Image (tube, rainbow, N blue to C red; front, side):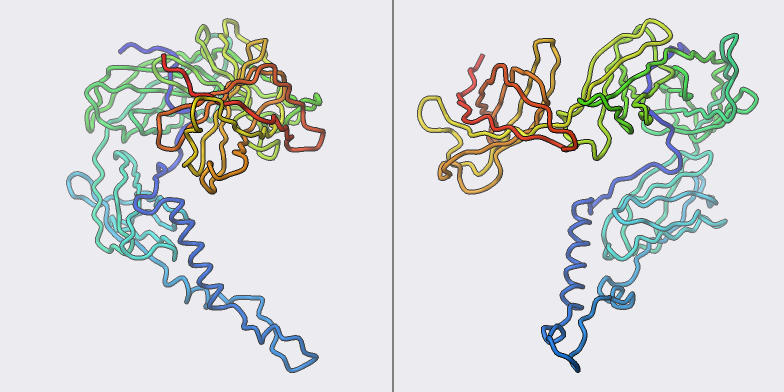
Length: 453
């Protein structure tokens, strides 16, 4: 084994069953189903015109409430999935946790002593709908299967996994924190164990002839152990792992009026063979600290505005790349609320505009300042009549305040053809205090066909 101290694929342990996506009915479809059900219920239960008749007395009052019984009548009965979970030898698995990947909240209890389980999926999914059902049990490899709503005899087999154990120590002068959790990741799954007396053990790890294990403890640089064999039912002892506290990055985030941005996220992403991310949230002073970062490695550091700061668009996010050599480093970020750029696309190339028959366009921008700061954003021309029949081809996209050279790319739907434009020295003002965004009209933008190199 050749342990190396840092790369990691996930930023936090996975507690409980893995999250599954809906199969057959996705979030958008589920939202549509909800809307149709609500519309149907509204139409059926809505008061008649005479219920709203204005009269001093005797006229029926308008209904303002819908009873639970009426809602159940419109949505239909609650749906379930029933089945049994067994191990590789066909023995029932007691205590298996279940999670249904659906838009609505699912209700499930662990499997009983006979391995039997029932999962309630609510009233939004008709019988026969395919959903993803995830199962997890101690010592067994988690799995996700397709299940049909209304199915009553589903059989799920959980294979026996491998076990991983080890011991952790900290450098001289440091104390091992209490209530320490270790996450052991192999492939796409992560197992979590608690450190007791400096040792940890976990089971149910996916067997493999050449596994790559990532061992992560919050506040320390992750370990990577590559090329190890994990055998079903066997235990791999990693021995003693000396934890590296790594470097601490302190980030200060303020807005254009020098006010701290509480709730902003400081995100650090490491390069290398596998990308890993660390996150920390800014307090009332606009300061966040990320610990356990590897030294001597190029890291991408980003400040992400909190919800409600501006318009939650890409142009409001600020990034930079750095390498930490010492035990501590500070970095400051200035977050701007976005400005909406609007203007008109005017074809300046030979012949007629290539988008005359299109009903919409994608518009993307890449900006650079004199100091080398960059940002990208996406917008477009909204869907409507063919562009050739419109008086003006108006576009919109989000941008960041400052002085920028902005390259614009216009894309036609379903086509590799690109048209370009450029705005040099564009001055974008800071939105007024208290405003979530600003607006700037850039006027006519001359667009030409992009040259083929």
